[in-house]
Image (cartoon, one colour):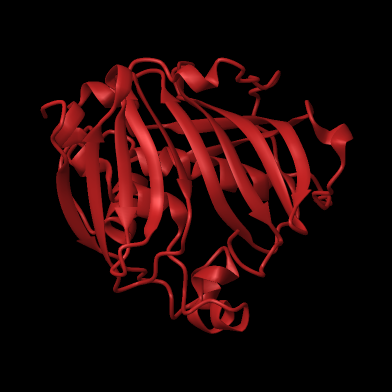
Length: 277
């Protein structure tokens, strides 16, 4: 890719579980419930949408990006099943590459950057003080807009990251069995890692629904399927913006061998079903 070259890919969005509300974690991914909330239809989960750009990123940056690379991205508009999404990567400053994902109307749905090496904007990352997985709190508390929650660790959770789990995830969310996320020793897909914070939030709090708005991630070591993966987190801030509650929290993902695989800062609107700001 030359300094002025922009490359383009296209993918058609899909959501296989949209007609089965019982299989969905969040009501915004069900067409009936999403329309009641003012959307045109079921929203595709943000981690899946961004994840569809991963083949383009790997074609541009290579597998070294998975070993020690970074991404930061935010969501501007929903993506619906059937949308043809245009993905573009454009070289930027200091080795960063600009990512855009646009809908059929030409509107940006996802904008961000990717690059190799350390993520310079995660210099103030706050690692959790505990990474020992434990059951969800019983009873689970509500997540309140309370400044006192900033700096508080969340209960870590462990999940099965076996090749069988990853293969099922790839089939459902990416309709792919392509390397390096397939075979006998598959890598953990970056979008699977990006999905850990939302799961951790629901492990700790009663959450009716949420809308993923922004993520910054840095891959710290090669991540392969196998064993249990632990996610721990620490709340950075809880606040209201335009009448909607937001939570921002830092997450650390640790592999079964004790190595830290990724760190990220995740921002989401929670229990806010009126729309995307």
